[in-house]
Length: 250
Image (tube, rainbow, N blue to C red; front, top):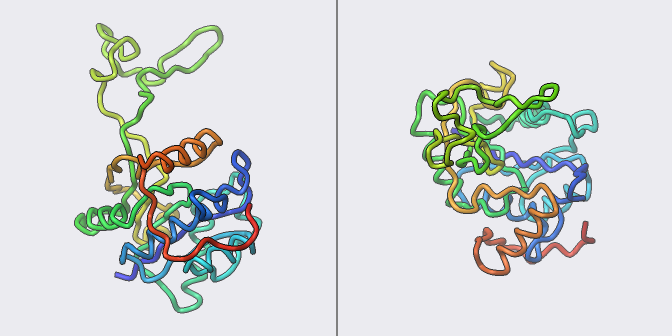
């Protein structure tokens, strides 16, 4: 199997400006994903998909490849993943670099380690019927306690609970286990993209992340928490072999 890591890093982040290249513990955030992918030994190549020349320069410095910039038309706030994945795989195919498996590793999960990727890879290849693998964790806010607002009434989001003991009035420990996806990683066969025009397919293998492996930086609160976790030694960052990028900060 020829596997490549695909790292999406568009430059249009709104909630945390330029979060993909903002510095955490000295390095741009994207450096930790590139370092983890390369150190895992799973991938032949680490490809960054970005619409920014500056991001491309940073990614290249840390050992990734940027075959070409992502077109603006598929780099918007609402652009689905399938568009840039299709574009990147087509670019690789055209250059004779076809792969059979790809993994999406998002820069906003800095605490994903090489060992995380290796563990996920073993899980994926062990299941011969899988279309893809997706990282999940147990949800903190259970959907059994969520509501929709209709007129002047609240209705349970999940109308499945027993009448004698509604989920919204039960302790968390008594509720059925529900898992939420996180941004840590996804792995899929490239045939899934061609055959279903999705990045996941139908048969999805769960991969349960541990500790802070699935931590995702999306808002300033997340960024501040990430800095705190690093400063206290509560979360581990992948080792980055390069000296910090010397260019201008985000």
